[in-house]
Structures are given as structure tokens and as C-alpha cells.
Picture (tube, rainbow, N blue to C red):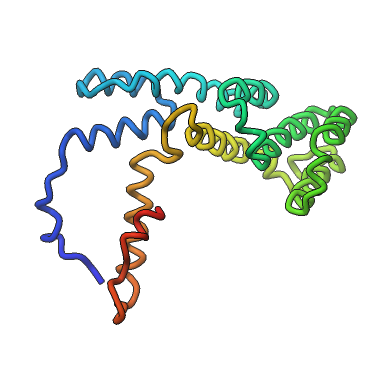
Length: 216
């Protein structure tokens, strides 16, 4: 099922709405200088708290990408004290990055000690067991980058964890911001609409409901 463009092409979209969508994306992704320039050029209200928060999130992301995970953990606890206690998955991911750094730098004894002190407590939960085995398997290789678990030492893996912690921080009460930017939400909602429109019409009701949009 396709929508006739005539049904929506004449719907007006205000500059204010467009500007807010763009600014939301810039703030969420820590493009502070670009966000400040955008605010100045468009004349929209400057979200002072949001722009100040960018610096802290950007530093945490930078630490993660530069393999300084312990510093990232320290700063995260300063910014959002309860986040890592409440989000054990994220804390595990950050700790595992430091373990990987030790292994890749040839500090296998230190890596094993760190795993025993910081990662072994997670072994009591089944969902972490497979992950722990995968990380510990890196110790068996002189060149971890050639192991079956090579993806754990990639920049893409660190970037993924950096993205997760950025969203997690945004989702706390400390930032008062949504975890996803307005642009991302629009794309998610558009995807839901496309999926429903591509399905066979439901004879018992409309092809989608308001709940589908709310759940996005």
C-alpha cells in the first residue's frame, strides 16, 4: 500500500520544528561547536544546560575511544553517580574494554588479575558467562587480533559501547533529555509506518494504531 503524495506534500513544516530536529541531533551526538553555530545562525533559543552537558559526555566518549576506560568509568560516576550501579550490562562492557586493553598490550598477568577482581562477580549470572568466556579466550593468543574474538578489540566495538553510554547518560534525570534525538525518533516512526503499509490490509481494523507510534 502506497500513500498518494498529494495527501502530505502540501502539509506545512515550520522552520522552528526543522531547526529543533537538527539541533537535537547535534546535541545528542556532541557536536557542540556546530550546535553553537547553528543556534547563532538560526536565532533559536539556546539550550544552555544541554550544551554544557555535551562537554562531559564528549569527554567520556573520547576516553572510551582512546582506550582509557577506567577514566571513562570515573567520569561517568561523577556525571551520573547511579548509572553504572543500575546498568550492570553497561558497567560490564566498560570493564571488559579495560581487560581487552591489558591483553592487547601484553599484560596478561595484570589482565587475569583484573578479570578475577572485577569481572568474575558477573560469572554468577548466566547471561554473562558466554561473554566472559569469549573475553578470557583472548589470553590464549599471542596476537589477539587474529583470534576468533577479534571483534572485541576493534574500534567499532568501542564505538558501540560509547554510543550505549551516551544514550544511557542522556536517558537519566541528570540531563533531562531523551535517549534518542528527534531525527532518530522520526526515522523509527517512519520505519514503523512503512512496515505497516507494506502489510496486507487488516479487515478487522486499521493497518496500524496510535500505540505503534507511542511505542517507537
